[in-house]
Length: 114
Image (cartoon, rainbow, N blue to C red; front, side):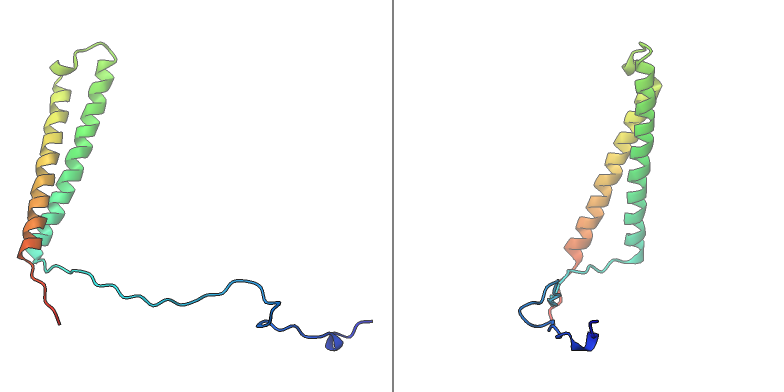
């Protein structure tokens, strides 16, 4: 019978080592942080929500108008199509307004070096 204590021990560090090895890599990241007052933060959040809601409602109405088109009704005469276009325009206006606010915040922010 084999005696477990009589078998030679294998070294993990030697030439017979196998498996994976984890090497730590330390990194540093420098981000530009913008100072945003609460009122501007609320405005940007509101514009983001308004953009999402306007595009969602516009998509819903456009989908409904496409269902009407399948029934051979003219798309340009349907009020549902016109409502969808109005919501898409409102979404674009909200998106442009939000971008204007974020550009103003970036323009007004200054870099502080330490």
